[in-house]
Amino acid sequence: MGDTGTALRALRGAQKSAKGVSLYSRYLNRPAGRLLAAVAFRAGLTPNQVTAVSATFTFASVAAVALVEPSWWLGAVVYAGLVTGFAFDSADGQLARLTGRGGPDGEWLDHVVDCAKMILVHTAVLISFHRFAELPSDAWLLLPIGFQSAAVLTFCAGLLREQLGKAAAGAVPAAQGGPGVPGVSGATAGPVSRLRAVALLPADYGVFCLVFLLLGAPEVFRAGYAALAVVHALFLVAFLVKWFRELKALRAY
Image (cartoon, rainbow, N blue to C red; front, side, top):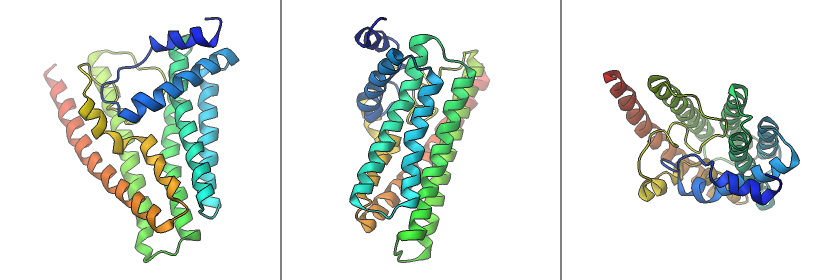
């Protein structure tokens, strides 16, 4: 693997299953992550260093949401930073599979960054609402808290479903590289459903990032953010029911 092209070809054969992955992650984030992984390989970076790059882009963007008055230019900068961080989040796992340098420490670090991202991005929206927005009611301040709760619970419950399922099957934990929906992506074998990939779009972090492009129109941003919060809450209920039934079924084995 002496050049970027060779690394890219090797990465194409080292992809995780597309089952349970939204169209955004399958056709945009994973290919972007593959290119970044190849570049990182050529630069001699480790998977954990790529995770650190992902965290830098993400947390800088989150800080901007909390500290800078909303505007169209801020929305563009925040969106670019968040999706770049998300692409590097895919790249670290792909680099780990390419080099064989992944391990429990890398998987742990990746999940810690993912969890911190989900907590802090909604905390930043809450701070922005409090500092800059002319809210119709203080009840709007509860919206980021509710969205945060749904996102973090989905993430944690999905990871538990994934790990408990692997433990029951005697599987080895996967390399680092956070999926759009933990516990859904590649959880089980089977054919890839295009309809499912479309249905999962609203729950994909990359699609969520799009709402920040609306920061220049505060009322529109709040409406879009509220709509996504409702969708994530509905997905949470559906996922919890699905994962409970799957884990309960494992008792038979």
